[in-house]
Image 1: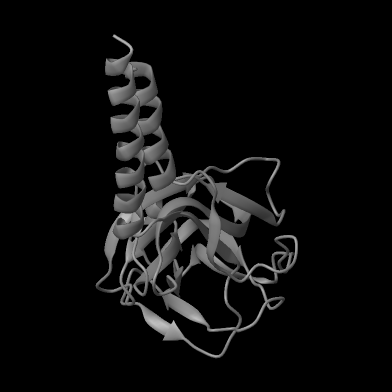
Image 2: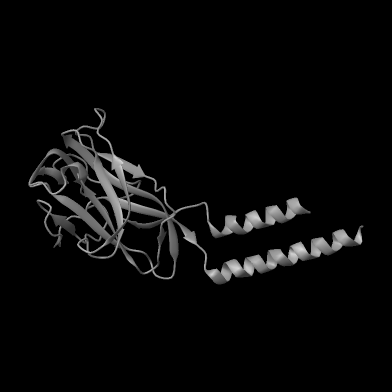
Amino acid sequence: MRRVIGILVASIFGFSLSVYADTISSNLGPGNTFQTGTVNSWANGGDSNPANAVVFVVPSGQNYLLTQIMVADNWFAGSSPLTVSISAGSDPNTATLLESFTIPTSDAIQFASELFTVTPSLQTLLMGGQSYIIEESIAACGVASSCDTTWGWQWNNLMPPQTGFFARFDGGSWFAETGIITPAYAVLGSPVPEPSSTVLLFTGLLGVVVVMWKRSLQRI
């Protein structure tokens, strides 16, 4: 009986934290394609030490647990890793950092256009209708006026709409770059069910447990 109850409880949590992931926001083309080549990218680091960011909005009416972030980049020069972060807000100047990740340099990826996937270690909840920011920078260079490492965030004009992005130079304030090609990215997450759905499922499973418990007493 205890084993059955344990299985039912596990089912509740399995339902609440869905194991499959949906695409929350993406501008990758079919088959996760994007524009390749170092000339088709926005620089991070290098001269004037730029950093870049993309804002996306979670669809209204659905919350998600963040499962993956995908970015297309090339490592051009230097030795410092690329820092990729996700923040809450619509303005990079005031957004709240949620989690950050690093992508190390490697001889295998120099000058190559690669699609990188980072997996969060935190159970970050993305709320429906709210704005979030994916940022790329060279953290090792801080707010220096130049950086000896350069990465390039690949463009993607394969998937409309092109909403532009945010940029900053020399560690200064972020500003909007509008009407130009948006860097290639994708954000994936597991849908979180509505509280009412979870309560309904729990009530049904609890009823099953009660019936099984009563039957077990009758057999004693």
